[in-house]
Length: 461
Image (cartoon, rainbow, N blue to C red):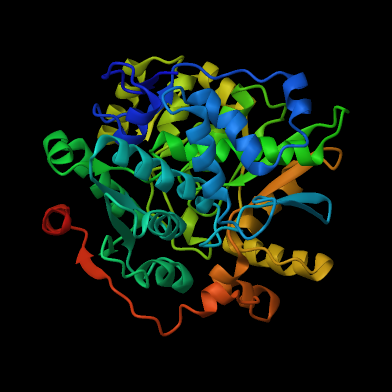
């Protein structure tokens, strides 16, 4: 299995090199040259597998430069950290299935990928005798999951940028209370897009990237997306039998990585209907799917802060496929975006988009109402991001479809929103309660690329 860039500027590389490269050296994102195909008989044969066993079956098809037994050990070790024996269990509530992705160490879906990515990094670095300086941006959950995935690991130093005061208090505490010597938190006076743009600028400075051995932990890293493909298969196997009931997924969407993983699963042959792309008021992707309007606007702060994003990094991976794997067309699209603040699409392209996706934007009032009504009817608490996906699924999917809604975070991570919606605080897990009063370490900076660059240089290994 070889990996190529959406911008077409690199020679194909192996999986380990793709993990270490993160963002392609030509500024594009890495993708496999082709997707392994899974038959219905193979799917049915996987029904009795554990989550880790299923992960090995899927991930190993994309990896040919790590011995199978070694890869299996890395996968097993990664998912042994989860508190639920199924890792990502599926529960049925009020006519929808909830795919619970919050049973990892930081209580968010990012743990599913980042526990594995941390172990992959450590393995590859030890094998090569190298050190890696990870630089990443987060709107909330990626940062804490990445930090907990690599804290204390040999050969790794991590720098995480987050928008100062624009994550939930729990999200912030899960990052800044990690004071291991190899962890550096940077709070930026600005938005997530400011953080992400500065990280991309550092990676696009190829001399700087090489000199300081930069690595990516955001979902620009292909291994992140690959790990998330697994739970689409896992959920499908849990809600289907030998019949042909239609299955559809609703995905609360910010940076397009989670829903792109679903798109990969579909390309591999997983039977599903349209992927439902659910957004909050930051709805550039909904405007794109429903009307072809991919134009940048200002970021709006909401009760679902991990989705408060305009420019979704992983959208480029989908564009590469939409443009029939034409890297020049991708380059032209992003040149157009830089010049005009928008990308235009043809009628034929939009027809394909609307074959792949449907979309809905759920505002804050509807989000809070959904948390409240869903809890009243079922006793089940949704976090605000998951509520966006549930509301969209109830509105757009028919009742004869197995509606699988991705629950991306534990409700206690967004306690203020939950309390506002139901009139009582969410039960707080011990791991969150223990954060109060802990020692913290964080550097607050303006959205100034040179200031961030100097900080990385000063603290990089």
